[in-house]
Image (tube, rainbow over all chains, first blue to last red):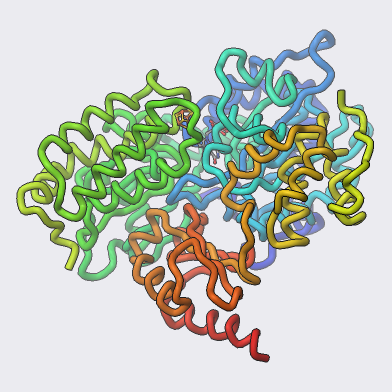
Length: 422
Length: 171
Ligand SMILES: Cc1cc2nc3c(=O)[nH]c(=O)nc-3n(C[C@H](O)[C@H](O)[C@H](O)COP(=O)(O)O)c2cc1C
Ligand code: SF4
C-alpha cells in the first residue's frame, strides 16, 4: 500500500533536503511551478482532498474564494495551522518531527496556488523539537534556492516564517489564529468577512492544517487519479489515524481513508489485558462518544457523522472499563473550561458551570436536578448560540456521555458515590 | 503608524541584545505588535519571567499600550507574569494522560516537592504547573521540563529526574 505521508518519515533522524530530493521530494512543487496557479487549484479540487484540521472542509473549495489574477491584492498569506492542542491528537507532531520537508513542500504548493509570497507555520510552543527540525529544513530549502525570490526562474517568490505560539487552544481556531499572529488577544473573529478575502493584516489568507498540506506534494507529483485510488471510501487519500488510552500499543498509522476504527484498535494490539472497551471518541476531545458496537464503521467524514459523532482529527481516545465515564467527561470539560477564550457568555460561564456540576457528581454529591441542568447546558452552548465552535465541541462528549452512559450518571446520583473511587 | 518608536526609557530596562532581538522579530511582520509573543519570549528566556518593568518597555518598543500587551501576555499558558523556579515542570493533565492515571504522579510530585500544583519549591529550584495535552498521547503520561518533552513517565522515572534536579543545588 502507498503511504505518501509516512513512507519516508523518520522520527529519529528526518531526511535532510538531499535525501528528501533523492526520493522525489520537491518534484510536486516543481511540477506546480510549471503550471498556472489556477491549474494547481483545479487539481487539488479534483483530488477530493478534505481538510484534516477537524472540520473536513474541501481544500480546493476553500481556496476558490481567494481573489486571483491581476486585480487581486498583491500581498496574500498562507498559514499552516500546526497549533495541535486538541487532546488525544498527536499526528501533526509526528509529521513535523519525522518529515519536515514534506510539510514545507506542501506549504510551497499551497502558497503558489493562491499566490501568497509569505507563509507562516503557526506552531504550538511546546513542540520544540518540531521547531528545530522545521527551522533547519527551512534553512536548507533557502540554501537550495527553493525559497526566496524568483524560485527556479519561475517569477514566484516565497518566504516561510516559523511562528512559535505560547500555548492556548483557541489559537488553533482559524480566525483566533489570525488575531494571535497579529499580536492581539486571540479571540475569534466574526465571519464574514472570511479570511480568504480579509485575513491576516486584512489580506487574503488561507489557513490549512499541517496534515492537509502534507497531502499536496503527492497530488501534484502523481496526479489526481493516483490520489483517489489510495482509498476506496468516499473520502480520498490516506489519513494519519491514531489511538490512545488503555490499549496495548498506542500509536499512529497512515491508512487509507475510511478504514474501520476496529482495524485501528487491532493495530494497537487491542485493549490492555483485563480491560474492556466501553466507549471511544473518534477524533479528539471535541467529538461525541461512540460505543464498541460502532467499531466497524468506516472512519470517514460521512459515516462517523451519520453515527452521531465527527471524524475530527482521527485521533481515537479509548475509554476502558477501569475508568469512570463521568470522570472522563469531567476531565474533558475542565480542559474546555480552562481554554475558553471568554469572549461570549454561554461558553465563558456555561463551561465552568458544567465543570462544577460534574465535580459534584463525581464525588457522589450530584442530584437529579444536576443531571437535568447538564442537559440544559448542552442546549445553551450548542451551535449558533456561541461565537465559535469551541463550546459546541465541548458539548459533544458531554451530551453523548449523558446518552450512552446514563446508567453511570444515574448510579452516581442514586448511590451517592463513584464506584471507581476507593 | 508603524515607524520605529524613539527609544528613551528602554535603555535601562532591556539589554541591547534583547532590543536587537525584538527589532529582528518585528521585521518579520507587517505590523510591529505582531511580534508581541516573540518579544515576551525573548525577555522570558533571558530572565525566567516577564516583570512589569519589562512589560512596559516591550509595549513601548512594539508600539502598543501596556494594557494591550498585558492582555496578550496573560492570555497564554507559557508566558509567566510571576517569578518561577530555576526549573519549570509542566505536567500534562489532559485525557490521554488521565487515562494512564497521571493523578497519582501529580500527587507524588507534590509530596516530594512539598508544594501544590502551581507553586515553587521552597529552595526556589522547581516550579510545578499543569499543562493541557502535550501531544504525546501514545507515550502518556507526559510532562515538559524546561521546555523539553519527557514521555512514558512513571514514579521511578520522575524520582530520578527530581534527584538530578535537586542534587544540582548541592553540587
Ligand atoms: C477551538 C478550535 C481549535 C482548533 N484547533 C486547531 C488546530 O490546532 N489545528 C488545526 O489544524 N485546526 C484547528 N481547528 C480548526 C481550524 O479552525 C480550521 O478549521 C483548520 O485549521 C482548517 O484547516 P483544514 O481546512 O486544512 O482542515 C480548531 C478549531 C477550533 C474551533
Ligand atoms: S465559544 Fe468560547 S472560545 Fe469561542 S468565542 Fe465564545 S468564549 Fe471564546
